[in-house]
Length: 632
Image (tube, rainbow, N blue to C red):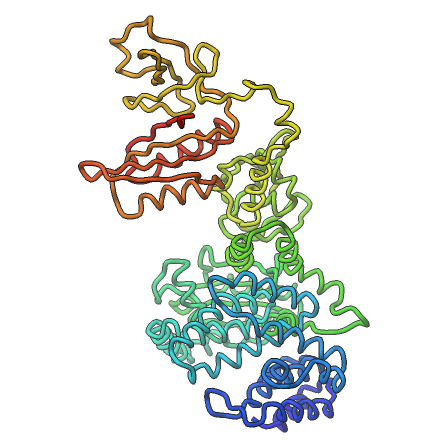
């Protein structure tokens, strides 16, 4: 590519770009990259020139195109930001500065969270930084074949997990689709080849597609509607994802034949939908209305699939404006009004960026922030409503607790139930697309530890864990005021007094099972009330026993189980998932392929003990759990 190609594209698209500054930026970059070649052997200047060309195709502004030509000069040469600001202005220098910082972003499992934080901090100053970065990544992916195979795989993995989802969030679907296909081709070449052949077979059905178009054109024209019907490009990775998510084989994927209908008004979109459903039977479960309820990334379209000419066909119906946004995303909206980067309407559509900042500013660990991005921010969504018709986006599988925390932390902390579509449901209820939800609260309510097992969003998990962390920190002044004996120092009370005891191995009572004490010498042995071994014991040796209302008490759980690979890890992961710290853990092999594992934990209260033992009992291969009070 040559500079004249870039200038021609700028002129073709009638962009308000300073051509003289573009030439000056090219000369500046060419000077500092002189003698440097890419892995392909071509001069390095080809990379920024291609990035600038793609941005011109997207009809980006003058500063973005100039900054893209300069984006590698500060990092890879002796040029300085001061030089760039002096030659091209403060705005261009700011973009180059943001892009230079993002050069530090390395996709490494141990450091990816902090790198992603930097990514969003840079973006918060100017969204054009992220747009240029995505196009930079796109051109690098197009030329990836010149790198060693292991490097190709590492770059492709980062592209699939970070950059393609980010392009989707920005509404840049053309960029997203190409990034995904290029990465998928490297990571799973065999499946890519199979799907490519299947798509090619679909292209051979041109006569069938023409027949469909002709039928539709006549029917739409009869309604007096103006519309353009075009074939939709088939993206390999999206087909693969659909196969995995819907557990279907290649023959069951509905959009191998797909048509896009672009019309002038929203009213006509729905009329065309009616025409399609009148002509061919719709496939159940394959209709989505993203016009009434747009995605967070501004995407709007009606999706439906029908059986036409003895095969499934997918349609997308949208207006011209929706089509432009679907293809170019944020880049399609780019405009300036004085110091404001985006108009108010557009700014409202970018609420997801503010959502990231809100979560980032809260007291979250790096792992919590990474999980939020991976599981919440980049996950498939459902759209639900508040009683006042506010749309809330949540990951699939979310519960009313997730919904409550998405609205406000206090609402989440105090929720006790929910009304979904006019029906009372439990907090475990899985929300569906289009649900209308009202949260029921109680002033004295507070989060429960078992919520950690039902919530889907990492934002909710972080809030629940934070509640229990704060609860675990006692106030020094309150400890001083407490009298000795006020807080039980033992798990059980005998005849109303807290006593040190032992739990019987014959029945291994767990809370809240009724218990009884039996005296053996000077020792109180705790049994289940209905323990078979007590039938022949002297009644005079029995004493009334009850579970104490403990507070921050250290106890040992003796867990007897079958020895298998991963059993200790399963127990530790189960306990850790509740936010409980493990003080000590040991394991030993027993006879007959059995094992005994002891873990010491600090229990906040009897409900905490009940929850932990209940969860451990559900682990495969667990035989019994016995509670042991540590010796003083």
